Image (cartoon, rainbow, N blue to C red; front, side, top):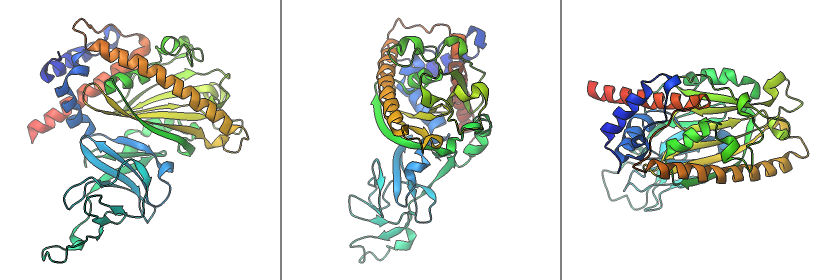
Length: 384
């Protein structure tokens, strides 16, 4: 049975008070307590930037994607001026949600009473409202949600005081400048729900310690543990790097790429942009997971990827990417099996967090981020 959220928060505080050299995995109740999820939603997902995908997937007027961020239905849309706009996805009449999934539309039509909105959120028309003397069409417009684009990624945020994405991630941008991440084209996008805690999947991404075992049938042999570098994390992100061998040619820098030199041409960055955007960035291709909790025991996953436009004119690029996507699907099957097993184990009364390897430094930094955000959110709440 999950401990209450006060115990979970205090257990996490005690855990992150240890230096990394003595660090253990996070306490089990941090993953299993429903009330701890409420802490995360209130102080993390309602306060930080959440990624809804890539901007090239929203290239045309009327392209949209929806999400539920900490219980708030949101739509991000390319409006008639070409700008990306975040809007409440709730009708201003009887409060039905409006759009679902991803797609393209000329206008936003409520599925309940057909109130219709323009792409900028202003009300276009409302049937059978002429007899209500208080109704004024011009008074209605869907509330705007903060929406920013950074290196081709699209983020939304519910907190008007959160620092801009580009400001928080300026160091990341400088670190990976030679990859030209803005110019990676999304080729696939899927949504999944797995039976594990969102942090289990995030941590699984953050460490490559598991690769030789969990991924023995796929990518486990492509990277060596001794080649993995796990620097200390930063306030808004952590990362580690691995060196790929040239058996996976599209993981290497394209011959036309003169921005990367030496080992940079085969270096893969695994970027964890807090709270929940995980990017595998190679010089040739990328794939990503954007995570959102569904209670303690499930995670909603936005899964996408594609190739660097450096490869766009290669005759075999599409064939290579089809093979890569098949590989990524197999990797996902392996990761799902591992992470769902971890959550089942976490729910055991006999589960005890073990010591972390030096290759799990990002997990330790992630735990410190979670604790810092919860503490900051609680402090702000007490001050108000």
